[in-house]
Every structure is written in structure tokens, then in C-alpha cells.
Image (cartoon, rainbow, N blue to C red; front, side, top):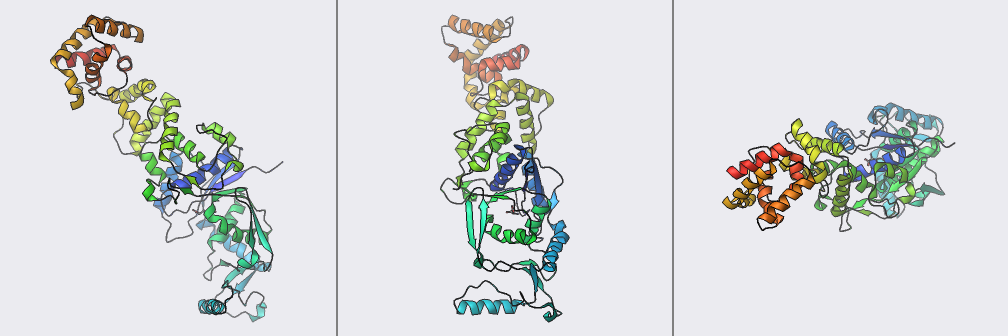
Length: 467
Ligand code: GLU
């Protein structure tokens, strides 16, 4: 039986959760969740100068919004430094690494000479094969013994076999002279110790893989399956940047895109399952596979994101959407809904969610149920409440007094009323929208009446007729 899948997301906490990072996290999450595996989170906080707790908080917040839950405790790479150093010393003890006493000046001199002579400037330390009794009592770094010839092949699940000439690899430093481990060592040791079986990450790390492979080989550790995924580009084919719009996951949250739509869209960025554009989490987890990841960069397309988000809103459960709207208001610092408003929103949801692409659009359409008497009438709608229209509303109000409150009866009453006044129902709609919502653009009049209920509808109509 093959071992259970363990993936991880390993962000460096130096900024917000970038849309590219969010996609990397999502791919790892989908891969693990679809295989009853584990999805771990490691914060790569070894760069003390650039890592901040605010950035870690922003990354966690972004992941929480996207629903990318991780298993186990969050691992701090920095806290594992003693273990990383132990591995470097282990390699030293087994002759796979060596102490290098070269000073910075000597290394610079080596490089300059190599350059002048047209040789490779990769540093070759004279200490690699030095006998321990020749070692001075001076600061040293620990370097790995890189293979001197042959090739290293990275079997990448996305890029295929990537072959690197070992002559291109130097004896990289594992442990600095102050005893701190280098990042490359930290990643390998952590991935090994965390039992990571699949590393899915941006292809900007492909070059690191060859160097990391040296450590796996030296330690005789199993190499995880690597999948280096292409970057995300903007619609113009250039690397995604601020000029293409928002870059942070949080910005999309603030714009009110539903998390399910965002997950669906991000999953499609560089991965596909046949022609499927719209899918649920369950389907994504079932379908997601490394084979479906494209080698070429994905292009971010806001229109597609909106389209998919609209489909998710339309398909969502009313109670879940209500909750998501409430969370959106909270996250964007807007006043919370009262429980009566939230209940109204949920009752209205069926007539709001068909064409909304974002949560604020949905909330905007729900204005009629969120607002209360006296209804404030917008300028555009006010012209529909001239004296003639008010007279009509007055008459209509009395006819609706005894009507049964269902769609069929309401349609009957309205159409009958319009016919008796020798007009079309469309002519009544403007004054009704103004009276019920104070707006010129609203959901359908019948839907508003049904959601508001008889008492509230009649009260709003009489208010408008009396004004
Ligand atoms: N910390 C790295 C980054 O944020 C990721 C390293 C890895 O996935 O191996 O780009």
C-alpha cells in the first residue's frame, strides 16, 4: 500500500497572501483532501529581518477566508533551526559535508581569478578534502560535498524530467559560521521531518530543487514528488503585478467575491478537468490531479472570475449565503445586520441571487428588505411618485387589502387593475418600485411584495400614496 499523501503550504511571512500563493495553497489542499491525506502549514520565518507576525496573520486570515483548513499545528521553520543544524553536523560526521575555513576575501579572490581566466566562477573550496588535522582554530561554515560529475534529474510531475549538469552545482553552505542553517537545508529537513510526500509549489523554486536534491541524496532520504507549477500572468501575458489589479487574496475578499467562487476560479488557473469551468469543492477534490496541471503560465481573467462567482452565488444555499454576506460586512468593516434584516435577507435570497457576481451586489439588490419605513426615495425613483401615481397606489392599496398573499392572486389583482385603468402592468411597476424600495431598479415587484409580506407592503404603499 502506498503511504498516505502529505502536502504542505510553506509561505514566507513577508507580506499578504498573494493570489499565486493562494493558488499554491489551494492545489496542495485539494490534492491532500481528495486523497484523505494531510495538508500541513509551515511558516518559513527563517529570514528574521523580513518575517513579521502581521504577515503571518494576513496569510492565516486569507487561508481561513478561502476555507483552506490545515492539519496539525502550524510549523515555524525558525523554531526548527537546532534540528537543521543537527542534520548539517550529521552530514559532516558521515563525510558528506565538510568544514570550510575560507574567508570572504578568499572566496572573492577565487571568483575574480576564475572570471579573469574564463573558468566557472562556482566556488571550489580547498577544504573539501583537507585532513581534519590541518584545520585551523578559526570560524568555518559547513558545506555539502556536491557531486563532481554526472547529472541530477528532477522528476517533476508537471515539468517532466529536468536534467541538471552536476558541474553546475557548487558545494553549497549548509550551516553558516554563526551556526545558523541556510534556507535550502531548512526546507529539506522540514519536508522530511513533516513526512511531506508531495511538494506542489511555484516553478520559481525549480532551480532550488536540484540543490535540495543533494541533501536528500546525502541523507539517503526519499525525495518527495515534486510538482512545480507555472506562475500566474496578467491578461497581457506578463507576470501578474499590481497594474493588473488586486494581488492579495484579502482584496478579493474585500471586493466581496464568494470564497467558493474564488476557490473554483483559482483551481482553474493552470489546472483543468476536461471542459469543466464550474464545479463544487467536492468535485474539485475528486478531480484534482497533477496530470491536469498545465506547463504554460495561467492568465488571470477578472471576467472569468466574476462569471464563476456569479454561478456559485446562484447555486448557493440561502442560509449559507446569508452567513457569507454577514461575514463579508464584518470583514469589510460595515455595520452588522440586525437579526430581522438578516432573516429578511435570507427570505429574499431566492430573488436576489440569480444575477449577482459579488456579495455587495447581492446586498445592494436586497436594499428593499434591509431598509425600513419611512422609505427614503431616491431621486431617480421620486418622479414615479407624482400625484397621479399616488392616486393609483391609493386605489391599489385598497384592492390589495383583502387579497390572498400569493403570487397567483397578486398577479391577478395587478393585471385586473391595469386592465381597468386601460394600461399595462409595466406602467404600475415604477410607482410600485418607488413605494416599496425607494428605488427605480429593484427585484421584481411581485417578489418584493411576497418577501415583505402583506402588512409591510400595504404600509409602504399607503405611506407613498399619502406623501
Ligand atoms: N517559502 C517559499 C515561498 O514562500 C516556498 C518554499 C517551498 O515551497 O519550498 O516562496
